[in-house]
Length: 108
Length: 423
Image (cartoon, rainbow over all chains, first blue to last red; front, side):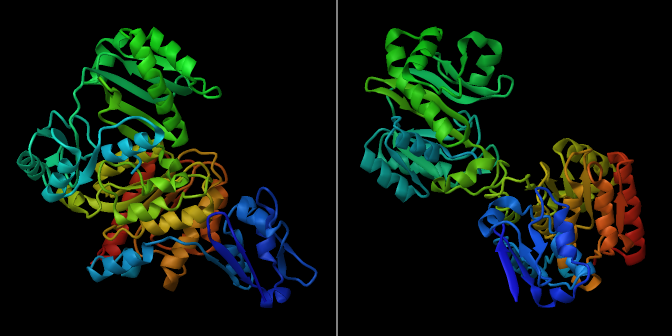
């Protein structure tokens, strides 16, 4: 089962909620509740995160993209949150630099 | 770039309804000759470089025959004006000017409103004229809510020294259209210098249009690349960084490479480091402290205005993709920015870029979080194990920029001694 939603930056947050009912921390919802203007993720009766606002509201910026759910789920939850945001051209740039012997430090 | 070339600016003015000379842009002698033959002689050939004082530097030539056009194009294309290579030339009608005027619309930060600038004495070295004889350049504020209507424009012209009744009637519509251009395209400056007064009416003999960097994404029709204005062509990384603010108003991610290929750093005998700062003032101060210690920030970055963690994640990836860096500093000013979000973005980027070590970097990195939620920011690094890296140093609000730079030097020296540095 997957919860996916687009955010203002053009990125997409995807949560594989299969393991969420067994997660004790519910870290995603905990950290989200601390953010202004209030929680985007809340825990449903099935123990899985769901959106409190509508998809449109989230896309218009209600989700502040704090990445708290991504990071806290990784260390306190089941590590099932993924975030993809486009950064057009970066991969091609890094590949061309590597080919020219100028790899960035994180590829060395 | 936010500043349009002359031919782009003139095209914009023409579309808005201001007369400009007939002409076209050329990238070769053949193209230049063809345009000249189409529009008829005599013509002006103008280097398309984003630099002032172009005429005095030999960037404008006149031609009465096809051969002269070829010679003029040959001389300009490939030459450089104030260090900027000429890659395009504008070939256009040479105007028979009776008089020259200067018209501009810009923002006056002290008044917090737009102003129009006018001179009926021509616009050659207008900045000097404004300094030496301010009365020759008339300024009038515009009420942004009311805009600039024809009768207001006529009133402004009526008060402009040297303007005749005929000038008022001829220039008022141009002024109104110039203001409309300024507002429509989110400009910082729209300038016609000179506005040629000809027998056929006013004609924009030159045009300068600067679009607000942060509004470029609102005008895809202009085909501009949303990068910082540097006076040179943007680098690949600057173009990539320019997409980060696109369509997302939450904070800013400004990024400029100061030494894209590391040549200057090597020449100065310094150590290249990547850099990010919250607030431009703190950025300059921190850079000033780093350079005497033997380091050179190869980029400028300002991530302020409370950017989302998502923005921080992306700009950090861009900053760390610079190929020759041997360290990284993040320094915030004493800011109201929510620094825990800033930290989350950086940590997310580090974990992605250095997956084998769980985000622990292979080069020295110093983070000085000073301001709102600074302790929480440091805690984020602790929670994810990155603070435990021997090559990471986290500082709080009790340090100034000099102490941060000195701490980085200590860290870098320890790293260099232990690892031998980057091979």
